[in-house]
Length: 300
Image 1 (tube, rainbow, N blue to C red):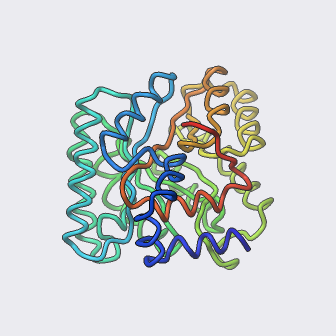
Image 2 (image 1 turned 90 degrees about the vertical axis):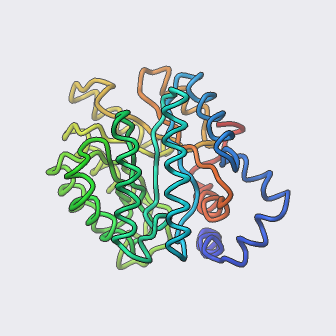
């Protein structure tokens, strides 16, 4: 019930406007969000790199309501790309397609995404297309399959949510393409017809899909704080004799710093997902909805 309520609140624009103007919620959000400015994000990346970890930067924002907003978001992401290159840090970029106009016009969204990839490509900077709620799954994958991956290859990747019933099929399709996949459980409220309602089924799907991606060898990102699933992935890698450069673990900023450090000390590649920006409220609500499984730490 609490999780459903938090996810419902994450979609309420009136709550967004109310909460983001108040200092206490903003201070709490700093546990999970690097800050509101690109300078804040750049500082967080440097701190993460200093600990021997890599990063991915996510400019928070989704579901823009005009082409002008989509273009503004594109330009902000271009500045993120430029800053990563200029600073010479170990980081890449994650982008949501609704932030670039997917709800408004697929052509506008595609053009904005291509502009970002064209800016990143000369520096071999990787860009990940984030996954959103299930109404966007097919549209996101279609754009990735038909336009982005054929042109930019391993410089662009996508995300699969193991909670969705369709994801086994999607994983197989992406493996055949040689696509780079980040595997997550999923943080959006979905119907039982679309997603597994029971945690055990989501966990089983995640473990199954992680093994397929690890075997395929397309540099997957195993993104979870669930230590049982992390242990299962490590066991599979060990049994198959795969090297640590075959994949990476990805963990959220502000969640389980101890786990980040332990995996790094064990020789695994670890990337920290660092969100930033003024549109932090929906992201924060989704993270709070996950807290029973992902207790926060005191740092990033």
